[in-house]
Length: 76
Image (cartoon, rainbow, N blue to C red; front, side, top):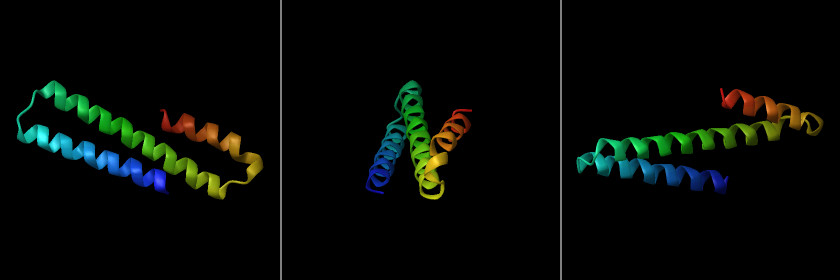
């Protein structure tokens, strides 16, 4: 869970950075780039959480099959 905590902390820092950029009335393109980075970071966090959850509940012999299904679903 330490890795997840680091990811969440990084995302929080990015969001605070966006807040600061908005207050400073920074260029729209810069703000949108940061928003895009946050979205990608959240997608990565989502993938990691889902994979950890399924690794905990899926029997060893089905892990590869389920992992591929999860990755396909997340990448829709």
